[in-house]
Image (cartoon, rainbow, N blue to C red; front, top):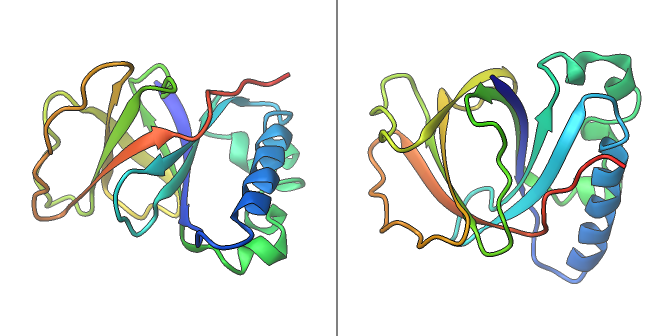
Amino acid sequence: MSVFYMVEMHYPLDEDRAEFNNFYAKHISMLLTIEGFETAQRYECQHDAKAPFMAIYRLADDKVLTRDTYTSRAGRNSVDPTFRAKMTNWDRNLVEGSLPDMNVLPDGWLILIDRQTEDAPALPGEFSSLRVIGLDATLAERGALIGNGETIPPNIEAKAGWTVRLFRPVHQTRYPG
């Protein structure tokens, strides 16, 4: 099973967005120096969404975020207060699933379905299930479908209790070192 740390938020597209992106690129570089962070990639939703920005980190195991090597250097308080004050709809979910990675090539895409409650309809069969195992736990289950150079499937009809989002990568997958 792979473990992923998924951070999502909204950041207004205003005059300091480029500065925020520069900060976040450095933040990812710092996180990738922490033992247990294996990959990092940022994504932007292709339609209106409550949280249109996401960073996904593959972790060595589910304990990485509780070790001193992480807690002493990272977490919500590691974000520059100037930027943190503007971030909204900020959720962090720790998930695990059978996907070996969530790397999306520059011309690829990622579709996420969030089952908001256990009573929501099951994920479609082609989606990989990501079970929520920690942090904010703002959903019951997340489903992921990745395409690299493939045609995006037709609109997936959202069902009651689901949130469906289509993401494109902001940058290629980054690795430590």
